[in-house]
Length: 190
Image 1 (cartoon, one colour):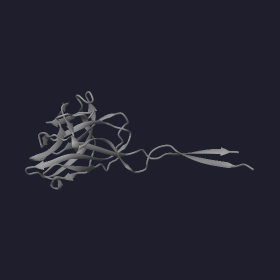
Image 2: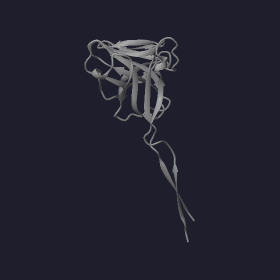
Image 3: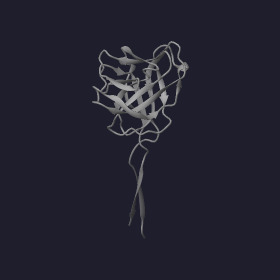
Image 4: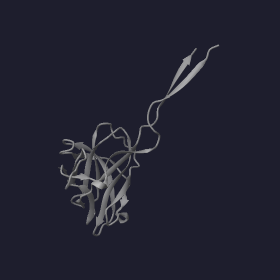
């Protein structure tokens, strides 16, 4: 009599748990960086992808003056030397759902931005995670310019030109989910 044995191997990943990909916590905060507005609408921080699918980002921000409209988190491709002259390049790779600025506090707080369009961050690839707001008055971002120690660096986009700032690190968090689990059956026939 022949026996058939099927063994299933679990090869990779968790199914849906959100995992921290990279961050620079608010305990590092020392200064407000930039004033996002129509002429300086984008500021970001370089980080390294890990093969996970992006789910959300958090920034340490507050609003000032008369603000209206929405603010977005965005991911850009990276150019320059990581950690010293990182800056964004090209079109937006993926953008979060909008956050209405009326819901943002007038004092520093972490604000979550959700990415509903799946985007996989390639393992070992550099990216820029950025915040975008182009209204009047503006949004300030918490940063560290006292002893910045994140491996990446800050950059901003003013009048459609990217600039790098190696003496600053933004306060940020990037989250994603691991690749889907893969099951491979192994069949043995006696």
